[in-house]
Image (tube, rainbow over all chains, first blue to last red; front, side):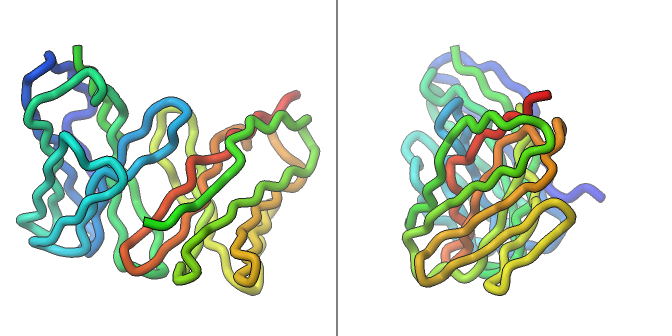
Length: 113
Length: 108
């Protein structure tokens, strides 16, 4: 069972470069989330989506854009990477807004130099 | 977004001891609660859901106090393998809100 799959798993970018992180889920979940996790900071929500074609800002949205053109995919874009965006990025999905657990991808370790 | 607050620890606990964590949430509209476990450099995984009546899963017991807006996790007879970060999570209309986690270290 695939669950939630993130690509790539590792990436090194130069400052100013752009990239897109892909999250794909095969559980027909409505909700999808992008988090970043830094040492001592816990999971911080970047953007989330409550359904196909919808997105919303989370706690730390600046410098990121997202799209949810298909229900199963949630893309996170960095238009001009900065060293402050060095982090571990986790995607998650959940079936509904109230009582269902979230399933996480294995994470993307991004380094911006 | 509403907050979920946890003591970050670390909690250093001898093997075999009982340890308890609390977390508080500020959104009274939160409808569901969970405890997640995260191992170093791994993704978070669901440990257990939290029900108003309290629930137990082996050595783990979770409690929810809606009046005081806190959730607790009790681990009995702790094992070395329980060493991890434990995340408190509240669910509501705009999805899930994670606490920053409590770091637990079980010492031999």
